[in-house]
Length: 110
Image 1 (cartoon, one colour):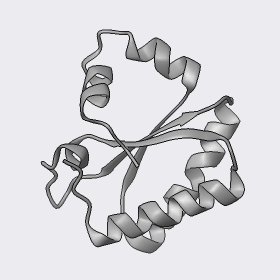
Image 2 (spheres, helix red, strand yellow):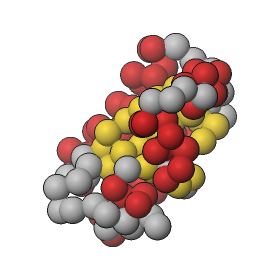
Image 3 (cartoon, one colour):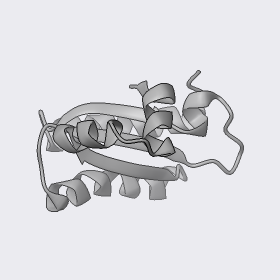
């Protein structure tokens, strides 16, 4: 049950617009996970964001999160990013680490 504040929804809309403009066709999927996706967030919760890219390297991963952090300065929304290529995500998702299982179970595509 995804629960976002109006400010977080605004941040998400602006961030998606920036991604579409500056990185067209790069992001395959954007998911919100963690307490916001489960509907258990508190006032101090950050916004956990998973970006799955068609392909890329560390430079692209760094560049693609920068606008999100810049928007956080303006809005006060605190994003926490995980960024993987589709290949990296599929390899990790098969693992037994609780974080991957949680994201797979609770993540909400937006």
